[in-house]
Image (tube, rainbow, N blue to C red; front, side, top):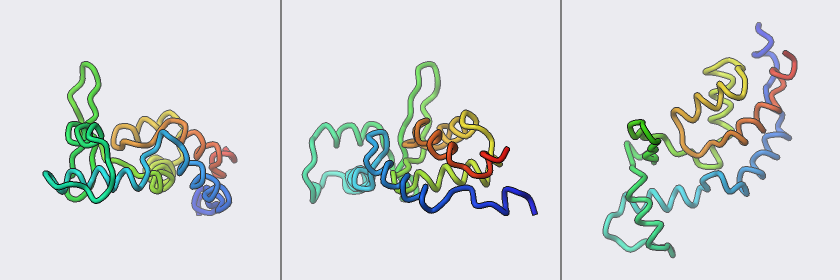
Length: 142
């Protein structure tokens, strides 16, 4: 059995601390914002059952898209073609980072993990990746 399979990468105390931090971090997309943007796109022409500013609706229609019930962000960078990225709610950030770092990439460093995540997802910041990987018990033993 490999060392990375024998040791849980993150303690439950860290997971609880991270959940509290990410819920208040302005760089993440709250579950409420995710719901509101999805609602706007799935109900064109209807008045939302919640208070919302017209610029939020306009920006949502310009930059977001629902594909197979999943919210995507239309990310555009200068000199590159636009790319749809899966929007990650703040409540899912730790799970996505864990999946990429532990399962997909095999405990690589912060830069490789962030680069992989930012290629596919919207709403996961470099700071969130750093916080998670600094608390990886397997990486600490390397």
